[in-house]
Image: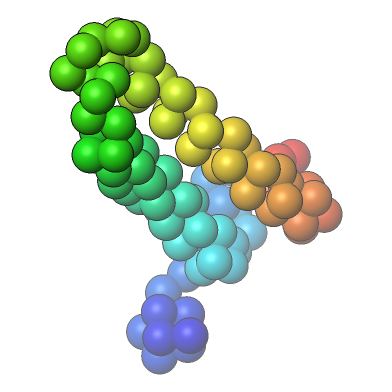
Length: 94
């Protein structure tokens, strides 16, 4: 509301020249930020909770990071796919 109405910021589609609602770039930026934040915070909590795995080296440490990236990636893909029908109907992928 602040950026779109009071500041009159407009986003223009690079190909068609049509005005893009402010929510689209905002959602893209927030999705990227939340993806990276979730990976870092969850990985740190795994290291705190599973100290016995890290100390004894029962599994390589990179497996913990990889599992967290996969979990967050799947959650982000579901979030993106929930927005995909809206974006297709609005014509952003033409």
